[in-house]
Length: 334
Image (cartoon, rainbow, N blue to C red):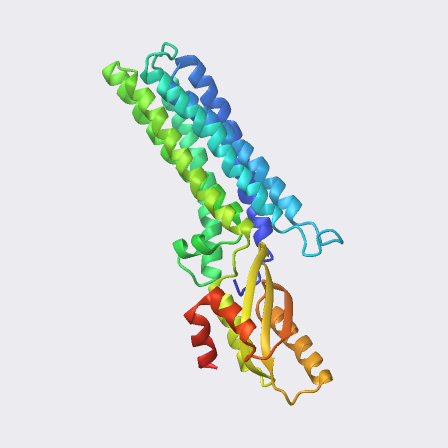
């Protein structure tokens, strides 16, 4: 995240718009096929696509509202709105897609569903849907691969540390959609081969569980971002090393960072300056160091530097309580 990701917003918008258009078209096709055949799996997939379409609307809202500039009421900007709307998107996947699929599947297995028939139309719809979903999935993968390479990270490592939930949400929901289409295909095929509707119901239940799992993963990611996760460990280490190398600083006593939004990092640090510095020297050093950090680490948008004595017992206890033994190793290294 030390690189400038100024184009990530446009890339995310393209990913979301493409996914939304694809899901809306697929939802209509699946609904028609489900109504014609009475297939619980196909109706579950239609609900899945409707939920995904609603998810894209929420993600577009997130992209637009989080880009608003800071104002008096929100001096740090609206960056965290992206995490809020992305969390609602995860909830919508669970409430709209998963719950309907589970209900439809259980009803079919228990014999309470509508009478079903098999039709070549179902297979045609699934094939078209798989191709369209694959197009959206490729765009989401392309964005994640591009951004992970820009940060010299592996694909999985980037997804774990990502501070933009938009491409991750689209990637996960498109992956779930492709798997869901395969499950629906198996359910319909086994129903046709055996004549038992249980297979169709089982496919619906599997789709519901799959969506619940994806919603959980996305909800956990956005919960951590909303609470206030620290910046990428690479950035934290880089900031600490940069401050420690400054001639005016004898020790970095405390360093706290927090994600304020996508590509927005707040830095609060307490440092022990050289006692020989005058008030004017101290002020100029703080201004210079803040400018250097924002220039070197493009994600850093706000820097607060507080001069403190490293020997203060109360401050020392606070830092140790937060970081444990690692705080001791930091100080010893300096």
